[in-house]
Image 1: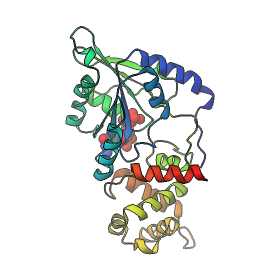
Image 2: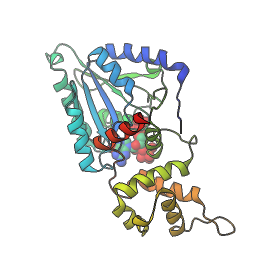
Image 3: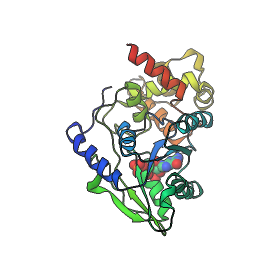
Image 4: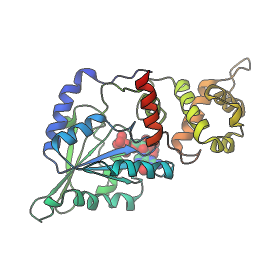
Length: 289
Ligand code: G4P
């Protein structure tokens, strides 16, 4: 499932992002805790290192993610220089309220009472940037939109005394290197609305769930995971939920949407699509091929 985004605009988007980053003190990178690497735009990390800016890496939607996997990811990121990783749910006001103090710790040189602490929220679409922004400002602000042209739509707002917060549009990168990242992003609704085949994405998701969360599948759909692979799981979900087409065949598209929606809503349970180990394995296999 090759996915390409805005290839023509990326050079200018990159430059605008680099310029925007020059004028801030801390990058708040929001990722999806269920797929933290797949939902990290490599360009953000690259620019952050280039500009030598510290990063508060927020593993958001932690309420939906597997706590053990989230802990493994925090350990992984907290070993990286200049990075502080924290798991939050931006929907929780108390979680969001921790963010400014964490940023202050990352930029102690701005803590002399004379210069404001300038923070910038970055991340791919749908990871929860607007939700976080609203929670920090304690009011609803207009969404900046998902586009690669960073400065065009960014907005900077005061966040209490001595602190500013810049919001940037969701930024994808031109080419997703690993197919499984594309599937994980599509399953989590970060990309591919109307652009990818739900059945294909749900089959991929089913494969991960069968491998790592078979008990959750058994509990939700009353299926025997041992007997199933990804396509067979979709058929089983379709049969259980009465997804039929005229003539009695199975409506696999409908079954796919049920599985995807259940995962997205968190009703299957707390699920992570990748761990540091699974990602290292995936990259080793993909690079060897
Ligand atoms: P974005 O600006 O990065 O594009 O993301 P946005 O804040 O719009 O959030 C995308 C979706 O993720 C929204 O759901 C939002 O409610 C949800 N979300 C954000 N943070 C969290 C979190 O910590 N936990 C959970 N469970 N969900 C979160 P939506 O379905 O598009 O809208 P809504 O009906 O939920 O508001």
